[in-house]
Length: 195
Ligand SMILES: Nc1nc2c(ncn2[C@@H]2O[C@H](COP(=O)(O)OP(=O)(O)OP(=O)(O)O)[C@@H](O)[C@H]2O)c(=O)[nH]1
Ligand SMILES: [Zn+2]
Image (cartoon, rainbow, N blue to C red; front, side):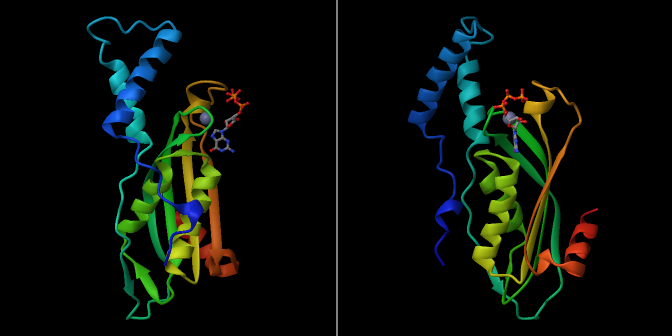
């Protein structure tokens, strides 16, 4: 199965050449803001800043591992409290929280660790929480063809807690439900098991 074009992994940013370019740019950016890095304790800060952003914007590639659903397991599989560490595309500031991912298996089941890997893959790029939530659901739907899939993310955006409106403690919840998880009792079961 080929990967949906919108769901392709983010490019790897942390090549040596790109890190050098980003280090120079970070130094210029800080200088433009009047931050003097020309002293012993901050001399390496542009480099650290470049490395930190490269780390926040680069996901690790992974093998997609699915198994035949030999046992015919047809109940909800729910992986709760997956860490979400992403960067908002407006301010390039981190937003962090948890994702809960569930699905109703069809003919294939997915290796459990892959849920956390797919969350990371879509999180480590400039994002909005709504798109991140939908991309995770769409990827699982596309790759696994389950009977239903649901993703709920609760996150805190530092762009609205550390700056701007400074709404410390405000969290945002988003959800994407597909197939049988959109409806009635299954939807209610999924949402109740998250809590
Ligand atoms: N819907 C959505 N909005 C987000 C997300 N991350 C950040 N934002 C919002 O993006 C908006 C950008 O608004 P602008 O008015 O262009 O930026 P700003 O002047 O810095 O806005 P303030 O944060 O209100 O100071 C802000 O309201 C942010 O809270 C996200 O994941 N989803
Ligand atoms: Zn933001």
